[in-house]
Image 1 (spheres, rainbow, N blue to C red):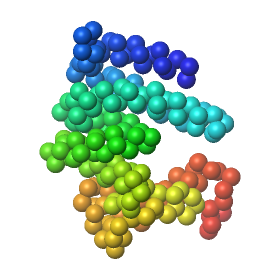
Image 2 (cartoon, rainbow, N blue to C red; image 1 turned 90 degrees about the vertical axis):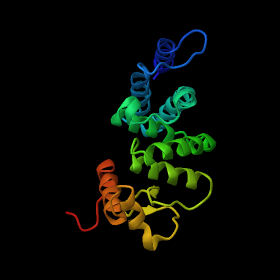
Image 3 (cartoon, rainbow, N blue to C red; image 1 turned 120 degrees about the vertical axis):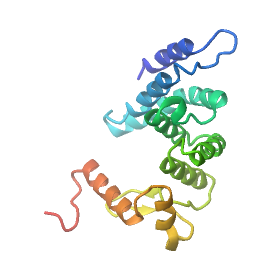
Image 4 (cartoon, one colour; image 1 turned 45 degrees about the horizontal axis):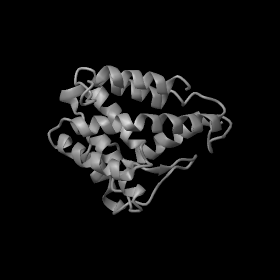
Length: 198
């Protein structure tokens, strides 16, 4: 992790010009991929407390670059950076919980791209829910959870029609989603015994 900050500064320098410090479009996918790698690289660090601290350093180091990208291009859609890299940018914003105003700003520009089929509807649902929860309101699509062996969703509007909303943006049913979360929990916690499993 100690090499992250110098590396990212070098990347930004390579993507910018001296007068405007704007990130050039041809280097944008490389920058987003590098930021994403920094974001994800902390997951394997042990012990978990060290991973959490490293993760916080990574996302806060990333944040000025994530902001610069949005200030210059809005939400980078498929036509600008490709589907995979666009989805990576969404995740960088999703992890910027310390600035919910920025998340909301990106959500608005992401919506424009989703309506043009130029960004992920699923990502839009996740970011919508994140913004709502971070602002003390119930979520809409049921993506934000309290993970355990019996995963539950955080407060959500109109749960009777939740699956209709989820399916409209390409998400699985809430039942399938929660079961997948439960499976992930037991994979991450092999010492926990799942009820009904030998």
